[in-house]
Image (cartoon, rainbow, N blue to C red; front, top):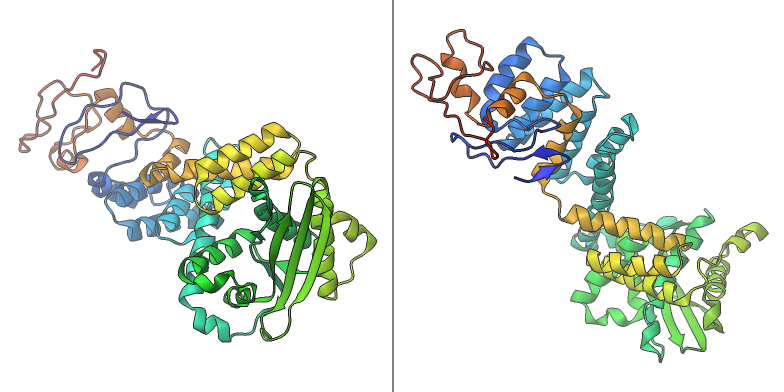
Length: 434
């Protein structure tokens, strides 16, 4: 049986009797769909019990009744707004419904209640994954509504830095183009003078356009993508040169005036002065936009992140893999970058994100939702299930118990009630326990 945080998730075949876990669960067994009836009755007599509400919501969700499950959770949070398990269940239900922004907010509320909870790491991982899904959904929406978006006015003060292409003679330096886009977006956003669109969103849009429009290699067509994203300006260009010197060239375009000649910015610098070259390119773009930076702001742009060129190249390789959804390859590349330069903060941050995405991609949605039960104390019903090591649909027990406590231990083969005909069969636990 799979163990999650010390808990056993039994594959329940409803209406059948199954063997239980060999390991004592530390948390709550998510109630199966058949338990919903009993849990509704229990909640009717204890309406303000958020633990009971979670159990009912989990039971409803397991049976596909997600709309009612959401209503139950909402009512629980209305009276107990900081109940951790309910916050976690709410986030899981929103995620399952494709409401990514709302799910992110719900997971953040969960973390705000107590960031030391045993599920805090899981919530952080889901937030990383959902942010990626949100970006992808925005890209799909931009492509689907291109005609309508293109007619709208761009947002003033926004810049989209589109991918730089590598045209140098040394192919081993190709990943510098991806690293350059990242550094430019980071440096230009850090000043607060302009709103730089998220690099990943711009990259994903560019990749989607490239798959459907072979003409996208023409730099002028970047205006199209910029319009889709609502950007006022677009910057894109090339990385050329060789192992001795780099030639960075960029073009700044106005999305509202695509016929206007782009403003060129070029930098020629030694390869080992990549960050100085990137900083000079960023400053050139600021100048082209007519933005006068302070001395402190100019000093901040183009700061050196690493002294190790191979770490920088591995970082660019990781960005490319992550953009393509190859999260394991991305993690390995970022691990290499960090091992080459443990002080490379951009690589360390990217490594954590890639690790989150890799693990989140493999998560089972059912287990994600059920994990909230680890924050609750087991109920008598769950302890009873664990003692017996068996499962019987609870609604087959309740009608015929004849006043007897359904959690009371029963002997092997003993009938549950005088009219039921249902027999609870003791199935030994692995190792000989009962």
